[in-house]
Length: 326
Image 1 (cartoon, rainbow, N blue to C red):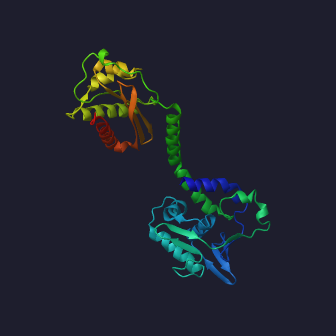
Image 2: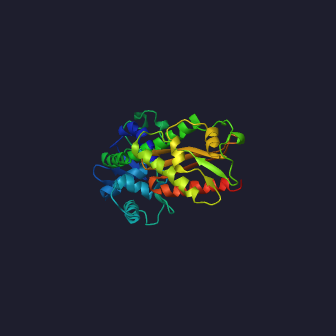
Image 3: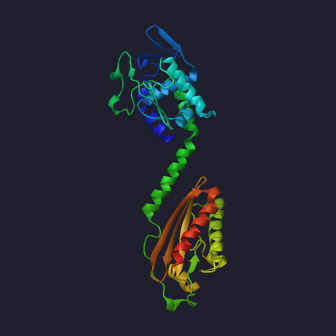
């Protein structure tokens, strides 16, 4: 999970300096090497997973930790149910002398997860001064054992593709807003210059959607979206739609909107692009009134490749809503 990675890696250098040093949680001295906690003359042995959970809750002290987060960090990809998380919490409460529902050390957050509210302190010989800029840390100073740190890092590495996908989508958004494609008003068309009279119903030419990628597989996906969109609208009796074979003649060409309108006798022209990042799709379109040169509708649709048909249906519906009143 991204926010785990951010907190963990920003603080990892400082935390490494106290890894393995004594930690006291709610009065209990935590000994990760011996897998036990101790207070006065009482010693409680803990299972490896339970100890790792205690360490991680201490690392996130005062913050709500979801069951899903605990599964990803502590169980590291092993399929477990919520019952395993709850059982570990019960074991921690029992070991620390609290009842099953006692929230004085570990609080249950309804339908979400848990929060360690017991005091966490570091008892190293050099104290907090042994850390670099301790006031800049976002969480209390605790030392994660090598075992807990290992499962956390392994899980984060397994999720690297998610981070890459998120960054790619953010990059596409930034490029879209920076370049502002189709943002300017186009040169208007003239009814007198049209090679055929305007139909007595809404008329539209759908230019082939473009792709910034040179991947042939992506080109097939983009062309299929264009062809399916034209086919869907052609079947509607209240619209005049220029045939797809005529529209694909414009593929990979720089064309003027007014020239398209003049050649095919239509009032509206749709242009747009399809971007793909892994299985994610983003469709950006703009509907232009060729007679005025103004953009009358813009739409951005996000989804996954498996939902391509649904995205096309939503795009068709949006277009019909825009064209029907005219």
